[in-house]
Image (cartoon, rainbow, N blue to C red; front, side, top):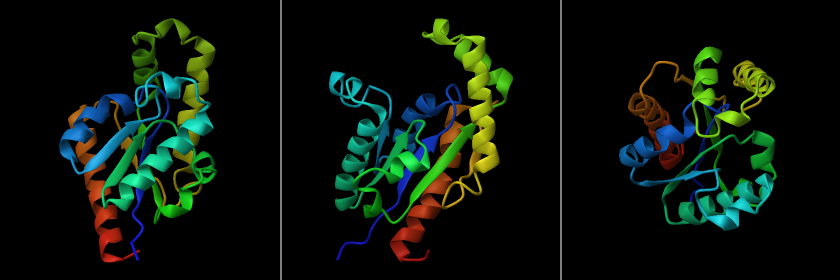
Amino acid sequence: MTRKLPLFIVTGASGVGKTTVMQNLRELLPEFVVFSTDNDNFGTTAAKLEYQDRYNLLLHCANAIAKSGRGTIICGTVMPWDAQKCDTYEEFSEVCFINLHCDDATRNWRLRNREDRATWTDDMLKQHEQFAQWLLDNAETAYNPPMPIIDTTSTPPYEVAEQIKRYIAAKWNESKTGIE
């Protein structure tokens, strides 16, 4: 019988650094496969998928990777109820979310300076401020296990990745020893 392994999802509002930290995570955790919920994993095939179908595909890949004894980190805005709808959700010992967060001024500046900056209207920025606050307010109650929060406001991406690595290492070691 194969022991179930945890799945790790690095989430947060747009502009907090999820995509930026991915390369650092790949360097720090080479034994893990790091995916994004963005369209860059599967080329134009994923671009045609609805979000829920994309999440389902990512969790299927993560499950296949787990069967080889390796871990997966998914970086992107995924909500617990979206992950729970996926076919293979129950194949993981737990799904651990990690929230990247920065202050509103920093996030808004980052979004206004991205390639897609024209899409970031004042209304969209306000929606992301509210979403970021929701994540903070619900980190302890809407997530099981409770979701740690890593502040990316002035923390360099490599240090953010180091903090993520420490959390993942602790959870990974728990799953390997059977301590829950």
